[in-house]
Length: 257
Ligand code: IPE
Ligand code: IPE
Ligand code: MG
Image 1 (cartoon, protein in one colour):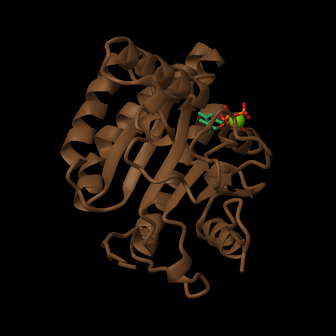
Image 2 (cartoon, rainbow, N blue to C red; image 1 turned 45 degrees about the vertical axis):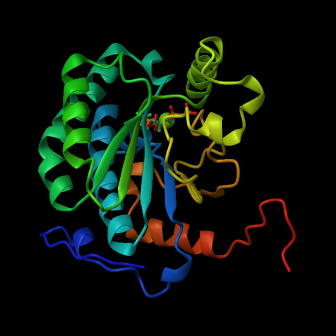
């Protein structure tokens, strides 16, 4: 599996796949529920939003590690359809944070050949964020590096509703015969169309739930739950998740011979 070196002062940019991880059995697609930012901040006597800021650093380091170690796709849950129910100040902080990070990081993402996409219903996002998303998607679309999917205003149920609606429209217009709808047709209408399903789901902050994340796509993902709060998710935590993954026997409903 290819390993690329990118140079920078940040040491997460230059490490190769750790010796204890088998490069032949890396998860090709890693999904992560980045939870625990608020608790991380509160435990330090800081406002919750400082946890979101720290969470961005953990995400940047995780992306670079995954890219350098040979992972093909990283899908991160940044904002759920349910997160709008939080206080307005926190939601506004998050939207502004997404904008700032995109502006600041786009050049580095391009240089590192990352292909970024935003999965979710993007229309309700602030106009400025939408245009930054459009620009970042366009500018990195032909990059041949890691696929970096940021789930923003994403909800697994909403995604399935939109897919059902789209299939119904196609059927009503005569373009699609309902009896021909199969798993592939449905998967092709999801935000993740064209991406392989995640092999590994990392769930931080100790909660044993998937919180409306990738309900369809996680059907056979291996699940790693860690008590680590997202801003503390470092190299060691990622190594532990990969070792846990590599200790599993995947059966996909069949038998292991
Ligand atoms: C995850 O951290 C980030 C988002 C959901 C946007 P939280 O903000 O949910 O942190 P906790 O769960 O309250 O600690
Ligand atoms: C999951 O975190 C959503 C994101 C990480 C964006 P939440 O904090 O929203 O999840 P619950 O409420 O603990 O299930
Ligand atoms: Mg939370």
